Length: 116
Image 1 (cartoon, rainbow, N blue to C red):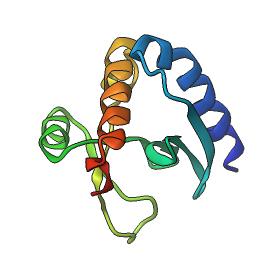
Image 2: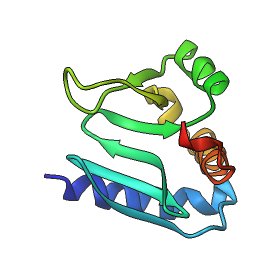
Image 3: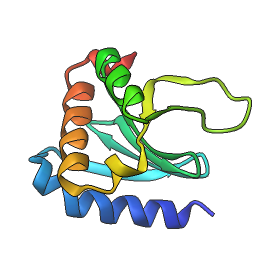
């Protein structure tokens, strides 16, 4: 069940990482019933039945929630993952926007502040 998410995430990152200017090695792995992408061993992005989610600083999360993003919960009744936002479809469907958010998320996780 998770295989299509892993394949889709690899394709997405293959297409957008160069646009985002991400030069670090990104890896993808199975994660819950979907897939997660890591940079330097840190998860910064997931694609699951819940949606496409990015790990970002609190102020940025609030901006994205105000723009239609949703709080991440991998399963019904599971705790909310407070450092993540599920992107609104409009944000996730524009390559330039999504590439910028991917770069922002990877940078945040590499900074050491992404362990929230």
